[in-house]
Length: 380
Image (cartoon, rainbow, N blue to C red; front, side):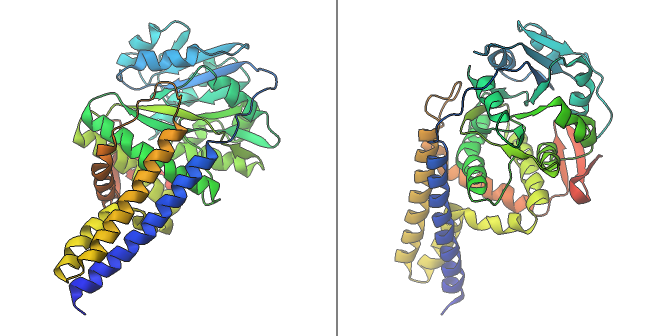
């Protein structure tokens, strides 16, 4: 048995395992978002905290979606910037119903958390909903989030999200990577009990709980601040609820370099959280593995095995696409990417994964950071 046969056969086997995983992930997405929405309970006054950085595409429109809520209680939408000259401040000030905190932020390597910690002095209400600047929501967003927060034993609420590219082709590629990669992986991990997601798309919690975990200021030197907040909430004996609803992440990556940096940062963050599990996740890249295996198998006279591995991987990935599209029906602000992106999505994602195994330096909104032990970061 030649070396090409051994290597190609091993890669084809890994691709088959990855294909089976994608089928399981697609089923998890299909079932999770088929659950009925939880509504009801008393509406509570809410402060939405939005840390901003730069005038992102469609920023005003995205912020306005948090103002236009079908919600009967008072809502304060509070946006903060790191410095008053940030262009995002001018955009936010033009959105009716939005208040702008001009900075400065608290010092620390994590500018987002420093921003949030500083603007909390202007927060007025007892329920705090932290949401990243690039999120888009439907009119029932706060009603569903607050209803979930009122569940027994719930200390925080977070939400899964889809992607939408607002800055051209590279951002649309990034959106497809979220839809067909990050989302099914997160849902599968959550459903299978392998992960406890808490995402920057939404972290809703009461001010008393926020105070007990040290406030946002406790996370100004942490890379995965959203995960760390979730872990701190669970450390109080409370759980993080993830309702069956989808938000939209509005991507602003206008170049290949920007897209690479964004997804590499996410991958390095996951590596720090999952440890050995991140290295093992390479098996989930079924299509790239099958593509690498194909020429080896063909040269060894095993073209049928190569074709089977490729066909199985492609069918499994298409099933994931269909499951996500079904879950995304009716999601406000969402535009489904073309399935033609699928091979590029998987090859680009595999390249990011390989780079993340070795990377120690990352870029976050133009700031160079060095990763350290226990999920800590420092500025370069």
